[in-house]
Image (cartoon, rainbow, N blue to C red; front, side, top):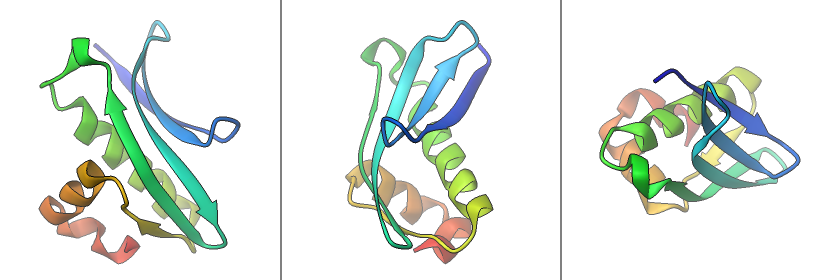
Length: 93
């Protein structure tokens, strides 16, 4: 299944969606100045255990990095755990 991470500014979240538009997972965020707080992440239980949560976090962090000038506050424990396992994103903290 081909998936895409997209930023939905209207809903203030990142979304992982399939080719047919199914919402697989999401990360809610708050933007305050130059700090983006990733405070809630979830994946559809029907798709659990497939690594989609990590794919979603990685896509969100790549987008945040590409925007420049933002730092991440990983309030969500899943996102914080991802940072612990992926030191290549430590510059965003």
